[in-house]
Length: 183
Image 1 (cartoon, rainbow, N blue to C red):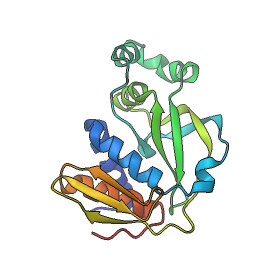
Image 2: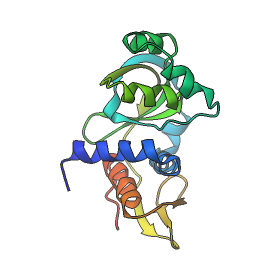
Image 3: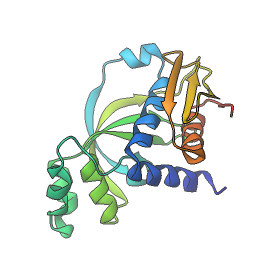
Image 4: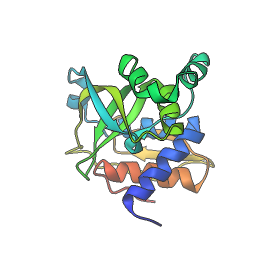
């Protein structure tokens, strides 16, 4: 099954290939945010984040963004990101690390991966969403192609998932947020 870092890497890679999975995982993460944390005022801070902890894929509402990012000279790409960083949402994990989900700039993150960068400049909503203290989130099977996150905020959210890999990815992310999801 692999170590935790390897499993997180597989989740990030799967998100890069499948926008529906990315959206389902972000919805699952948001279920683990307690109401008072959700309502907390967040500011944006500049940071250098480990690319392996970022969930993203090569899509955006403007298809030309991927083309624009790829047109930047590889040696100047980090500088390009300094001037136009992606915007990330941050979540604490039980590992003491932060997991990030792209809010804007997925194409810039995808090109950073293509270019082999390990850390990228980013703008991050801070502080990160804390580990849940009172939520007891679990998973249950919905109909074919669906799982349901139960006990979060909101109390029940159905997520479309395409197979075992997606269910395992949601379970891993919930575990990283302090839940012990059932299968």
